[in-house]
Amino acid sequence: SNVGLTLTELKMRIATYEDMCQAFSDAFKAYHGCRPSSGYANSFSYDELGEEILKLEQWAEEDAQREAREESLAVASVMAVGCPDEQTAQRWLDDAWEI
Image 1 (cartoon, helix red, strand yellow):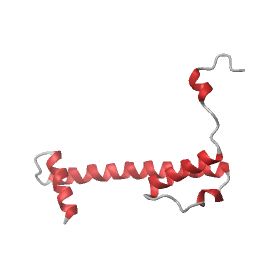
Image 2 (image 1 turned 135 degrees about the vertical axis):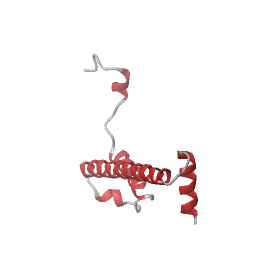
Image 3 (image 1 turned 180 degrees about the vertical axis):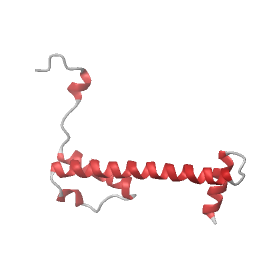
């Protein structure tokens, strides 16, 4: 029975296999920077796709957190050697990476 359900809950549906394949492709791209080869997702079952999506999303989040920590440490290092502010430190780091 739908009694007591909100409109949002009524609009929600179970993801189809095609939805899962698209979500896998999106998560794969977010982590690896490119989409998987055509049909690669079809080698997984529905449940395996869900597990792979969660794993890729977790890895992407861990990478983003690591990169943010490394960025913060790099800025702090530049500040420790006399940089006047964070914006300048970031510019100096960006310039250094261009060389």
